Length: 195
Image (tube, rainbow, N blue to C red; front, side):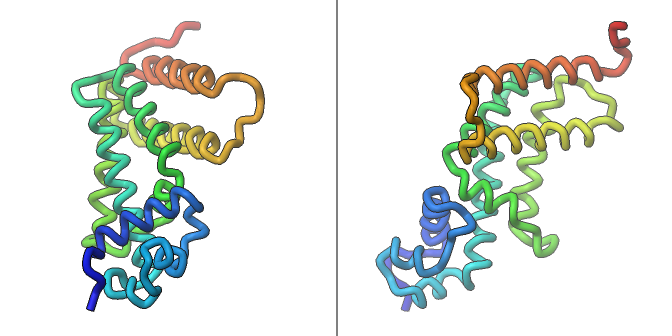
């Protein structure tokens, strides 16, 4: 009989909290069982195994990222949406590096996988961040890939402490967003770049 109080959702939440502390690559069912005060076999009454747990953490992470960006950008467009969404994503990654890593490591198992709508919501939040720039539809996918790469790269490097120089990371982040905003504005259809 499953332990009272444990559910698939509570086990997933505990696993997500654990990976934020120890790193996604260090996740084990034994460590999670110890954290929850149960024996390892008890967890299998709530999740199918470590791969299932990791996948559930990924779905949780992508849902949380989408919620964070969506809440931050609601009612905003253009530069304001870009800055608010970028800050929300950065804040999320710094607060939840393990679960964010789980989200990036996961792959949908099929069209009915709950990861699919979670990832689609993240994608929609990035689309909303770019909407005010009125990009040519043929350029939107390139802009989305650029945005994801830059924000993901900056936040994950910051989360693991890779910025060692004396320049303030907030100043660099603001500079990067100014650069992105300027580049996106120059890509608007019908605009002619200055010589």
